[in-house]
Each structure stands twice: as structure tokens, then as C-alpha cells.
Amino acid sequence: MGHPHIWVRHEARSTERRCPVTPDSARRLVEAGARVTVEESTQRIFPLDDYVAAGAETAPTGSWVDAPEDAFVLGLKELPEEPARLRHRHIYFGHAFKGQAEAPALLQRFRAGGGTLLDLEYLVADDGRRVAAFGYWAGYLGAALGVLQSRGALPAPLTPTTREELDASLRAGAGSDPTRALVTGALGRSGRGATDALAVAGVTTTRWDLDETRRLDRGALLDHDLLVHCVLTTTPSEPFVRAADVPAEGRRLSLLVDVTCDTSHLTLLPVYQDLTSWEAPVSRLADAEGGRPPLDVIAIDNLPSLLPLEASRTYAEDLFPTLLTLVTEGDVSPVWARARTTFEQALATTPAT
Image (cartoon, rainbow, N blue to C red):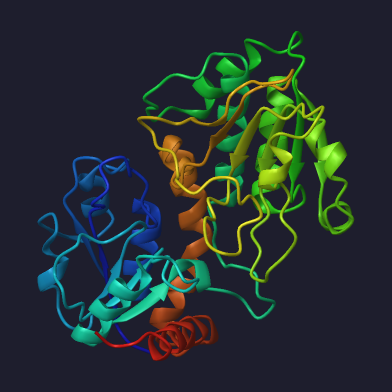
């Protein structure tokens, strides 16, 4: 079909070590006929030399702004605030299509430069399921941090680790942990990851999916110590935890882990507004009062970066077939066409400034 140019940029966020293209997937893209350029990065989990050995070209950090017009600029997290005009086809998590506060400014940058946002979240198959997602590791890490916080063993600031080290810390308290955990969205990617982590930690776990959340038993929900929330909705729904539940008599719930990090108007946990961070992973929502425990929240939007190697390998392998269609079909294949349509619809409904 052609020889697409995939430009893998350095991540501007200092804690982001993941990469959506591994050296192995870069090699397979090059062998299929793609041109792959990888920017220099001191924080990426994979060494630049491994990409060179795979046949990729290299470029200085941040040089995507001067990349050829036809390049697909590929990353994960937010772009730097400059340039004001975005002229390329950008592939990353833009968080611009659900009414987020930052969305109008970002979409205006694309409008000004004539570029396109092909959001990774909206690369979906015919059945509406994402072609690639970090959900499993987000759920795994969210539950793991929740367990460690419940045991008073969560370090701050957080630093990247390996699964072996993380699992060892979870097993350290297994067998004597009285925590009762609830996972919502237990059958999805994130829910499965959360359930697996809780099993490693030896924590008693209740699993809820669609049947249980449709008939929400809020009293039962509040009778758990830890809620690992893995349900991301696209339509207005009844909240799982409301402001009125915080002072509820008999509330046992003391820690919310919001794997979705959804603070939009669609959130199912409208009891907090601000995300937490690696530096300050836990935020206090309510102090202990009237026999009720304090209520804390963990809501970190790049949890899988804490396991950058495992998360990158899984995600890159899932994303590879879709990147390969840029070689075989171009960016008019159904997955890319749907993502472009989503962008165009968002742009059309955003007033020009």
C-alpha cells in the first residue's frame, strides 16, 4: 500500500517510561515496509540502541515538531504546550472528546495547524472494543497500591518497579490481611488485573460486573474496606459512591482506587475532583468521624508506568496489528477511519477561538 512514516516521540511527562512500540514491533514494522523514527529519550524503558538494531532511524528529543508532514507522530501521554499549531497526524491519548476542561484548547491547536488527533482510546474494532489498552496493568497496579495503602506500606513518592518486586511486597502481608475488597467491572481488562493482584495479596475479594452494578446494592458496596473501581461509562449513569454516602451510618469503606480516573460529568465516583500523583498518591476525602473510618482516594492516570516493561510489551503487541494496517491499507482502514471521524465530530462541535 505504501511506506508510512511512524515517528515515536519522547514523552514530555517525566514519569512516563512506557512506549507503544517496542524494539521488536519496530523491527516487524520496518520489515513490512514502514519507516520508523525513534526520538532519543533518557527515560524510555527500552534503550535507543535496541531500536537502531531493529532498523529504526533516530532523531533528537522533541524533534517531532519538525518531522515530515506525512509522519504519524506516536506517543502515549500529553503533548508539550508548544507549538500552538499542530500539523501532524498525532496518535496518543489526547483526552479531548469527553468534555474535559483542557479539550477546547487542545482541539484549537489541531484546528490551527490542520493536524489530526487519532486518539488511542478511540482505536476500536468493529465490536467497539479497543484494539489495545493498558487496562490489565492499570487494574493490577491500582489494586496493588490500594492493598499497600490499607496495610500502611505504600511508599511515596512512587517509583517504577518490576512485577517480581511488586508481587513480593503484596505477598509480604498475605494471610493476615483483614481487608475486604470490591472490584467493579471485574470481568473487563482492568477488573481482571485488579482481581489478580488481590489474589496475590491474599485479600478477600468481591467481584461485581454488569449484573451487580445494574442492581446496585449501595449498602453492600459501603460494607467493604477497599473499592477498586474499573467501570468507565460513556452515558450518564447512577453514581456508585455519592457525596451523601461519605457520612453514611455504618460506612466501612475507607479507600477508593479509581482506575478509570474519570473526573468528567460521567464519573461514577463524584466524590473527588482532583487526580492524585506519584509524588502524593493518596488524597484524604473525609476524616474519621462518628465511628466511621477516614475516606481516601487513589486516582493516578498513568498507573501502568509503574511497571513500564510489562505494560509496554503487552500494549505494543496488541497495537501492532493496527499499526501494520498503515502499511497494508493506509489510514483509511476501518479502525483509523473511525478514530478520524471521532476527532472530526469533536472538532466540529468545539467553537473556534
